[in-house]
Image (cartoon, rainbow, N blue to C red; front, side, top):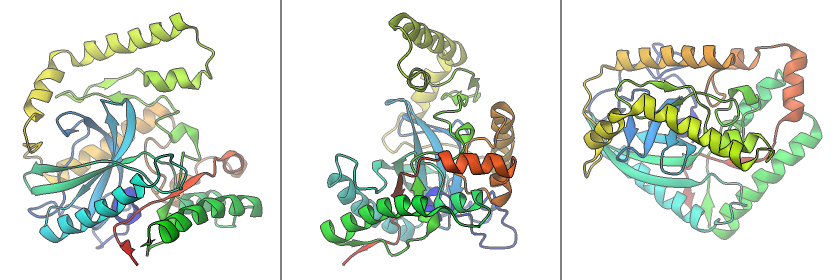
Length: 334
């Protein structure tokens, strides 16, 4: 998912910054314009922030309202050949998922897929499990000086498990194996991980109000099981009350607007406005979390170098090195 899944921000022109894809391809046949708080699949997925972009697609952190979890939402360009490429990728990803029901094969999981109609055409959308930093980010945490051998061995073990599964059991070739296409299961810096940092959850409301409650399930889990039953009930009640107060009638109205057979979204937003809102939201999240906000760790070397060398070294030493192979946009069968 790196080029068009989790954010390989390779600029295609001098106008592209490291954080956005520019506005040129926000046109008929191109990208779908997304706003923070937009909903997809009849209100099932609520966009929280941008994760990345590639030549084929943009990728967004989204909240799955049906299952109460974060996911990565990949929205393909709408031109026919991009749609066909997405369909081929989905076939491969479905085969991968069907053979790995126990989730032990170290390959990313496709959770859902659907079509979304917008002003620029009909876009294939894929929903993936939310993962953490890629190996390039891990390399940057070490200031490009390499990581200890025991860490390399652990990472390689997971990569080889994934490749063995693809090659020997499924006869699938990844074709684009590189550090950007291997993602850790979690962020190296927990303060940048929305599942651990208590990041604000954006609910599906027309005004994009921010609920300042942390995700209930994650709050309970972070307590390591020390909460009593009454404490858990209080947490759920508090979050539910806050959500009702923020959303109220607007949720029903938003879902009603979104409920149509093609999951069509009507928006006249201009690309410049969309990108401007993304940058503003990144600043908001950064201020609230006192960190780098919600992202996939591919924002460039500068983001990874915040804090002292000792801090980065400590985070690297404590990192969970379980990882998965991602980005099957160029994969094929043997």
